[in-house]
Each structure stands twice: as C-alpha cells, then as structure tokens.
Image 1 (cartoon, rainbow, N blue to C red):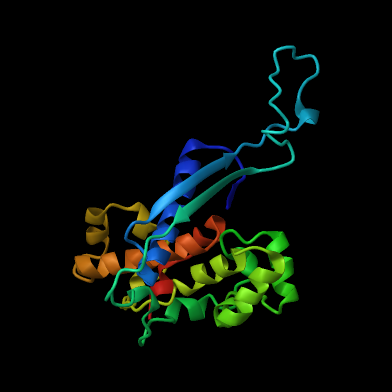
Image 2 (image 1 turned 180 degrees about the vertical axis):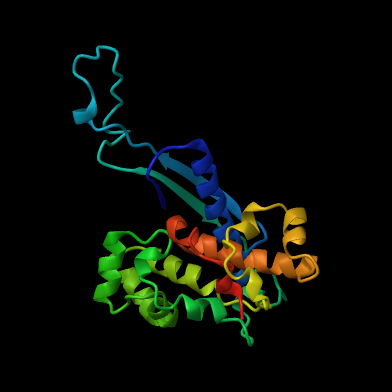
Length: 238
C-alpha cells in the first residue's frame, strides 16, 4: 500500500504505475507473468480535519467519516493474482549475479530501511526489533527469517520490502564517464530518448542508455520519492 500526502490525480496515476511495475517485475522474476491480472484496486480518501473547517461556512461539505477517515492519509492498495509458472523460462536478469550485479545495492546498503518505499514508522520499528535496520540488513536476511517475521505480524509486507531491495541485484554496464556523474538520476526517466542520446552523444549507445534507464527505474520503484529525486548519475557510475 502506498501513502499519498495529498490527493493529486497525476500522483495517483504515478503511484499506480509504480505498483503495477513492481508486480510485473516480481512476476517476471518468478516466471508467473502469464495470466497475471489485477484483482482489486482500492483508494482510501482522507478528508480535511474538522478543526480546519470554518463553522461560519454553511456550504462546507462534510464527508462520511467512516468512508473518508479524517485522521488517515490518502492511500492506494492494489491486489494481484499471479498466473501459473511458465515452464522453461530462464531466470530473470534481475536475479542474475555478475561483476556489477550488486553495485547499486552495495552503495545503498547503509541507507535506513524507512527510505524503502512503503516502509512506515510502524514497520521500521518492527524490523528494528528483528535486527533489520538498513537496506543491507534487509537484503541479507534469510528467506526463512523473512517468512517468520511475516507470520509473526500477520502480513507479507516484510517480504514485499525485501523483494523491492533485491530487484536492485541486476547486471548492467556502469557509466564510465565522470562528466555525467552529477546529472540527476531522474533525467534517465524524465527525458525523452532523443534528448538522452544528445546528452550522451558519442559516449553511450541507445541500448546502453536503455540499460541505465532500467536500473534507474528500479531505484525509483524501490525507494522513497523524495530520496530518489536526490540521487545523481554517480550511483550508476564506476
């Protein structure tokens, strides 16, 4: 479930896109992409605090407090149904291990787990109690322990958080040119391909740019938006 600080249609679409992209990445990595479908989409709408409503304003509209809780943020929840595993599908590149597969994960290993998208203060506290304080801790936690934590708290959220982190384990060719190190990482996702080709002219080929964009996409999928927007291209550089 993703939390929205303010309701904005574009933000809602962006969050939904992120949810679906994460689901398909997971489905692809496990060979369950065939027959995958979205089962349920729920948006919980918050409302203005009653204390902020002017009592003299007779035209103020008060929403049903059961359906639109005043103490809650706007939230988006998406449920999926995965298909049966596709036979003879090779392992996804997201899970391959090579020379550069753990470069990004290693550089972000010391980040606090609260910076993982979806980790609330509640889950930070619970994971801290389990000795999981950083992105690196979460990545190294055994599957058995993660499942045990899920069972303990009656939620699959800890497994979801770890899956997001492990999506960073992916082989790619790091950027070799330091002149691009201080360019914001979000340029890879925000700028059209033609503009990126001009920026990296005579330095990177189209497929190489696409490769970096794929990694950047996973980074923005896994981490809090405010944090991700501060990342520079140096994160993907040698």
